Image 1: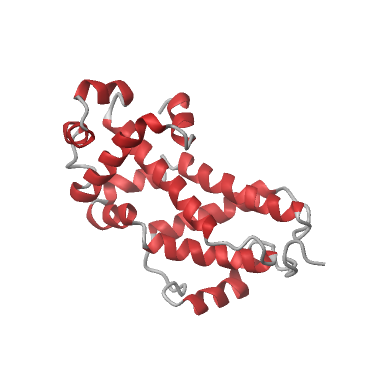
Image 2: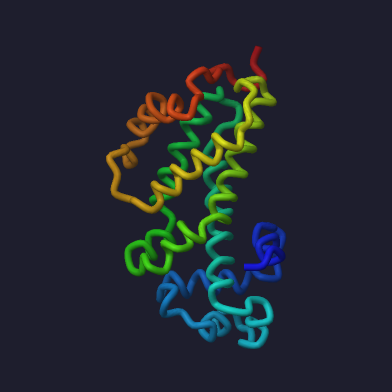
Length: 212
């Protein structure tokens, strides 16, 4: 994938590709990646195949584009599940819970892992740097925001962010888990006891942002 294409995919304002990515997503959900042709995507997007190939020169580029857009949407949805006025510890806990529940509701991921893991696994492993980058960038910004609010001690956020992102990716790949994911209260308690300390955040302030 070219650097220009990656930059375009990461840009939420890339409106000219919306209808193509929407069409491809719908086709992937209906047929899977392997059985979806570029002709089917063009038909659903109501454009010619020539136009589609001018935007995405080959099917793997389109697959990457859909995958990264869904990852960005997922991160945005997870972020909406976090109350930024809460204390830092609770924000971390709610981030963990929002991620777990969002992961269970991610339709494309569930569909592909169940029906054609050979298509999705490379996107999440050997070719997963871009996805990992989206998660790492978001989490680093999350930590920096808490640091600026004086709720987290100063430390380089990127290594911690990447570690958390890699754990998140592992949870995405191996959906059978002993981590409590279906009961919100149990997931929160698990996060308080295990997630916060594992990532060196045991001393997080519980003082809400902006409080005296």
